Structure formats: structure tokens, C-alpha cells
Image (cartoon, rainbow, N blue to C red; front, side, top):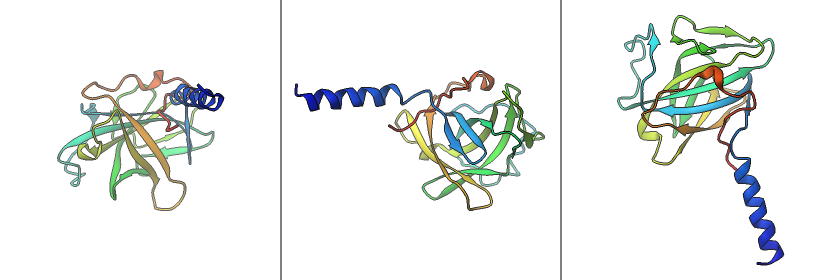
Length: 173
């Protein structure tokens, strides 16, 4: 093998090693984990009649994040987009508490993770191990963040508070 071939192989290996366990910056802080499940999580107070445009074939996208100091976050701040479709945030949680639509706004606390829950169209998730969406601020304008979600199939989401501070994002090499 030539020197340039070995160098290329080493570079690909380094990219593979750094492709997991990262955070992704977004307007309000850092994204720590992004997962999509086919299993609906429990959401206290969710009235599906309010969301008349929820997908008929839903998947559930959980986006765990850490807020920068002196920031706040509400379910109305972001949507996920893919292929011209917008999916609103339907609930959020602080730490490992259950999702509750009555808890629609939080303020940053040091060392606390927050998780946004979106209901997306399973048909847009695709067949691979990951699915790509864009986290878009509302109202429109501002910093849009591409997010690669890890698909976990029919498993339920794990503990949102146990996400490492160094992140667990799948980042495109």
C-alpha cells in the first residue's frame, strides 16, 4: 500500500472514531442526543385534537439539549423540517421527568438537560440507521441546524438525564 493510501485509510479511521459522542451547536446551546422511536412516549395532557395536522403514520423524535446560561426554551421556539414538511414540538421535559404539555417553558439551569419531543412522519424517516431533519427556529429566520437522528426502532427512549455532557450525537463525517 502506498503512503498516500495509508494516510487516507488513517484519515477515514479518525473520522469514523469521531463520528459519535459529540455535541452540535444550535441557537440556544448544544444538542446532546437526537433519537427517533416508533414507540409513542407517555405525554401528560396531550390532546391530539389540538394538533390536527399530526402525521397519520407517526414516529417520535426526541432532541436532548443543554441550554446556554440565561436562556429559556419553549415548545413554540422550534420545529423540525424535512422535505418541505414542518413538524411542531408537542412537549418538553426537564431532566428525566415525564413529558407534560403543561410544562411548556423552561429556564436554563446549570447541569440540567432538556428534551424536546416532535411527532414526525415515519414515511420521511427512511430505512437507514439515521434520519436527517433541520431544527428551525420559530418565527422563521435565524440559525437553522441540521440534525442527524439515530433511529432506535420500537425501543422506548432512555433516560434523558443520563446523556453525557460530552454529547451522544451522530455527526456526519
